[in-house]
Length: 146
Image (tube, rainbow, N blue to C red; front, side, top):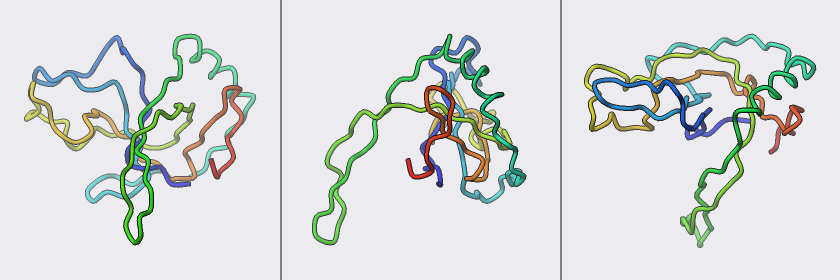
């Protein structure tokens, strides 16, 4: 299942935020599963996701990290067009992503206190869609269609 460009791994209130020239970056890493011109290619091997290894690690993370909600736009079809109707809170999910971590293209010396535009992320994980695994609370994989 392809990830939308707006999906992130995030941690609110990071103790060590990335700061460049007075600009404090958001506490998140963007996930890219689509190819971007000039960016490195993601690894294409498929590591085996073993629940017996993942479950205890997720339990440790859950002790200090609570899932929240994010806003997603909702649309309706009106004739031959799609119209934005509202935004709605959607529960966040646990995920494991296997990929290549690179600095965001906009992370450079020109980023000042005014920001750098885009999604305000310092890092990007470039991954193949098959290496993004969404998990339930007990660390079992979610069905592919969710």
